[in-house]
Image (tube, rainbow, N blue to C red; front, side, top):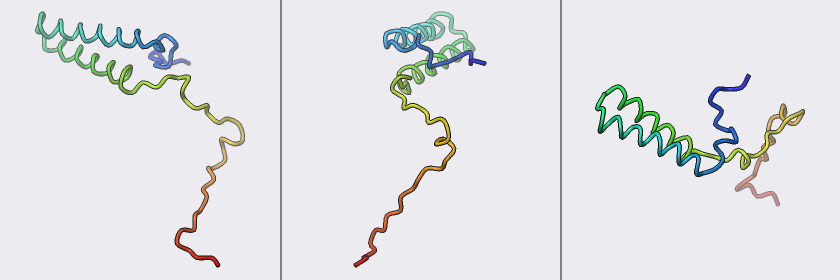
Length: 91
């Protein structure tokens, strides 16, 4: 089952769409703050604006830039850790 709010959807890839979404939520928050002055809607729209700015501009990582996940038998193995002998003289 697919999540309702899939932030890796191809719709969100272009930068102009993400900026437009943040700008619309910011304008809505300003409208509620300066015109209607309803405290509940002011807080709600400001929260939506902050969340949109965080997700779409600050924290955004392009889905195509993410490294591919390891699948198959290698995914079940623990990572190999190389031990370094620092400060040990082996002559």
